[in-house]
Length: 214
Ligand SMILES: Cc1cc2nc3c(=O)[nH]c(=O)nc-3n(C[C@H](O)[C@H](O)[C@H](O)COP(=O)(O)O)c2cc1C
Image: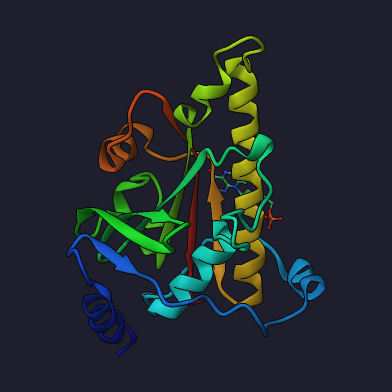
């Protein structure tokens, strides 16, 4: 039933373009306390065969890396104000890039590619949603030239912190929803890069599988 509702909602949400999903406003109040979420946070690798509804998806992406101020700043802090980390979503319906400023999903690929994230285990294949965090060196271009250029390794290092912050946001939000999740540093890098159509300046940092408890 939930799956039918999600598909119906996704179809309604597609407005100007068939490629984009406008997410509903995230719910920003309620839920358990931060201390309760911290206490419940843990890695779990089993998931029920259930999809999130569109409101749950909206809340998850907002918590992961949404905009929390009118100036466009994010729920996690970013070095030098450079928003260099993209969040991709791989779920039953397809593959999307999250646009935090528009709070929307831009479609990259149709179909269910979850099990291709890592063919060596079933974690991602069974998760409701797989989030892929991608560091984009191009976001640093204007800081890497000029009189006092930022070295490439510093830009890459900042990106690793950003992915870590997103990861913990997702862990805490999942705990608060009584969902399961597992972050993964091992994944099928070549396959995912192709699926997400990444360029040479973009690096996958983590795969984060999130889903309903079995
Ligand atoms: C950077 C990072 C990479 C990880 N990579 C994997 C992975 O590839 N596969 C996996 O099953 N778990 C992975 N984990 C999950 C850890 O195994 C898990 O966090 C650890 O056992 C501690 O358990 P806890 O999260 O319940 O505290 C990773 C965790 C982190 C922080």
